[in-house]
Length: 284
Image 1: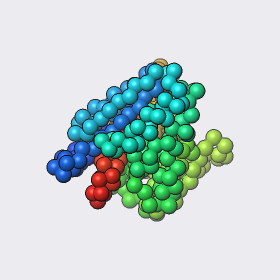
Image 2: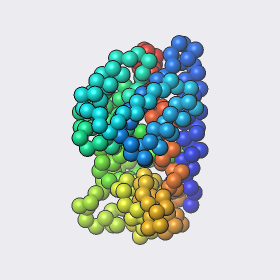
Image 3: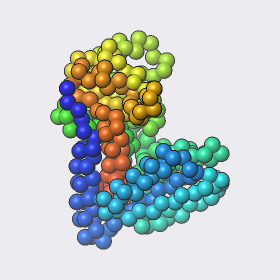
Image 4: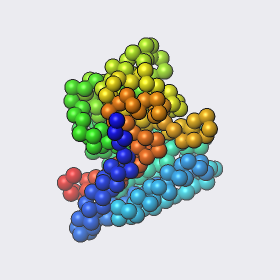
């Protein structure tokens, strides 16, 4: 069993992005990212801080808008409109979840698809579906980078994605399909779950249930990617996969923390770089 080191893979992605950013700067273009944070969700604040740090590392221009929880839909929409027309800003990211009185769908739909570096806008979701896209959602794109780092060829493999969210599960299945995997999606209503997951050459867990995946659910020699970010009975950070139970059964496995997490922000940097190129007529 080999542990897939998300920190090392994400560092390589960010170094690649930084090198390309230097080339863009030589042409007079500095990639710019605006992050909007509404309210005081502590996990969101940590994510936003990490995104700011990554922008610095890659040499990007960044702006942060920390809005009070009392912000109205109109105020939020107006800010998105302003950023849509700001040429210094190539990517706009609105940190979810929003306070309950705000409509996240309305905000996502308002972001210009060419600045939608989360790839949540319906235009970008449709593009991913048909395989002709500018941006990929950051977490699924990061998972693909981790799989590629193992040298395992996805083509022809059976892949099982546990979870059907719009942010991870569904786009994850599409990306695996684009690389010629045979893909099955499982969810809360799936019957004979262990039977399905234990047939997977590549198993991706994104269900938000701490240590749910046990050894009897995993095929010998499988690649196991844990997208979960949960707390165990002692309040310790863990994933959807019971790492200790599963690790000796698989060929590759991601740890939590230090697996998929760092990749999400690295791919956001990649998307912002791509957006800057697109908006300035530079080939991707």
